[in-house]
Image (cartoon, rainbow, N blue to C red; front, side):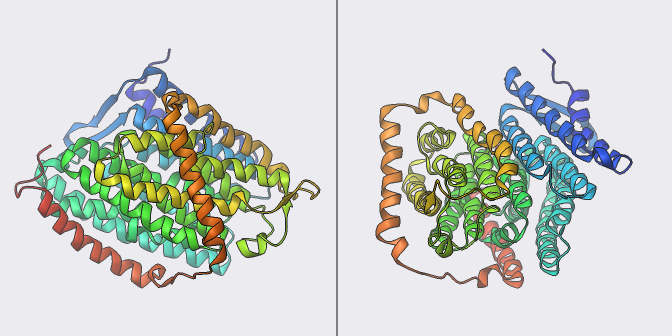
Length: 491
């Protein structure tokens, strides 16, 4: 078996960037280069799981530049590889230019780097490169709307990372190192600023309300990347902080509960299918954060589901659920979307069931009621997909052929991933999952389908989002002062 060494880890991180710039010289091979990058990531994640051990590589000791390769990160790397592969195959026969594939490769590379970073300054660099690649993909169509949405994303992202960078400087001042565990010996304001940057970047709670408009207005393959992979870079950093510094674990769990309820509250009443999926990305990130020790498995299942549903949404005749409920869609298209919706709702036989069961078992008592409410809300939201009218006599849309192979990979991953937690298939877990889904479907038919509530969108305006960041910084500072002694967090 190939052993994971510092040289291999660095080569794997550098490979997408080398290939990305090579595409400029050989643009006719853009798709094949992108395929090589995703397969390399798939192979690397397989090595991580086969070795079942943690490797920490210190590259520049005096600056604290460090990489960490472990099973937790392996789940996120596997998610990135499968989602990028699915998106690449979806675009394979499209008219996308080499520029699109270059940005896709560079985005994938920066995501990989972020998943391996174990120090705050390297993570900052990876997240900034990721932001630029994401902006260029969001604005790829060059329409006035897409350019504005891309610039809006970039402005919010840069503002969030400015807070983060100040916090990073405070950590370095306190520890003479940028290493993550230095958070335990840093002043409360350092933790508050770093967390604010990561919460905003990851689309978590009120600081993340930029996410629905950005994801819903992007092209379907770009939305799949943003929702399935990109936001999880900040989430993994938060999870690592919670695992390294137990005193900040309650903050991460609280953010998880808050964002799970906030996202699902919007999603239940949302009538636009892409906005509903975007709000549910906010909600499902809450499930990832609510139980840091098992975050990787949930992140994998969510990434596969959300990428699948955004790709399916691109083939629907309308984005409005009211219009979709009036005209049946092709049965074959419905099946693809329904499998993903069943998984995220927690139906047995799909990996979403195992991920939800494992996450529930790791919740603290004060989280249980809120997360069960969020789980019922998830079933309500995705009932909108599951109960869409369908007909076997309707011809599948032209895009269905481009959907088939990517969906085999993404949805196939939902079946295969059951192997990560076979213990979920106990009778009481199955009964609880079916009860939660039934409660959600019943609420959908009796209440949600009969009412029309339009939630205000004022909180999504740019100036309000920046204001929320400032208020969140104050709230986090007071919370950190309460949780930590004056001299710093004791690990």
